[in-house]
Length: 174
Figure 1 (cartoon, rainbow, N blue to C red):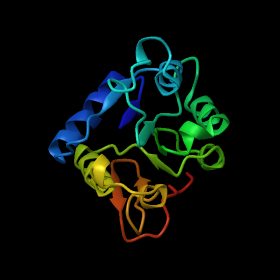
Figure 2 (figure 1 turned 180 degrees about the horizontal axis):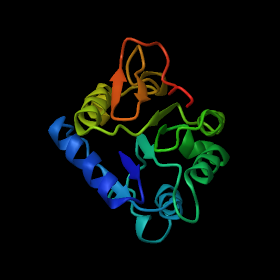
Figure 3 (figure 1 turned 120 degrees about the vertical axis):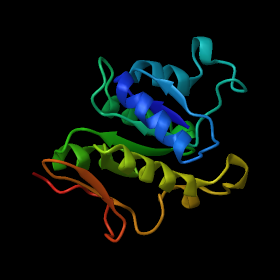
């Protein structure tokens, strides 16, 4: 799995949530969209695919310095030999429906507002466990859903929660 997140606190919290959810799959953390594209294309220090394999899942922030998350999604779309093999999940602090729709139109399978509460981040990480180990995943179809039904992440003024009883993964516009 590949996490592209420029905020080191958010990256740390997500890594900790993955540990708490007992996710065994390695998580590579990159701090910029440009670095993500270099990794995905196998450029420079990332050319050794045994050490830097193509991830089956990319967790992508949209608000990155320089090359943003939208550009990473565009790059994946322009390189289907790689993009086809990856499930793109956007975790963003932006609650704009139009930006979420744009991310989906560029190929993000799921767009979620970053949970505010750590417990909700752990719950999200546990849902990601449904992807299974790399050896048990057989098709892209099996990887494109977090689990049915997809969670809806809503944010109010004080908290954020994952509502798995909803059939959509779109956060409400505020």
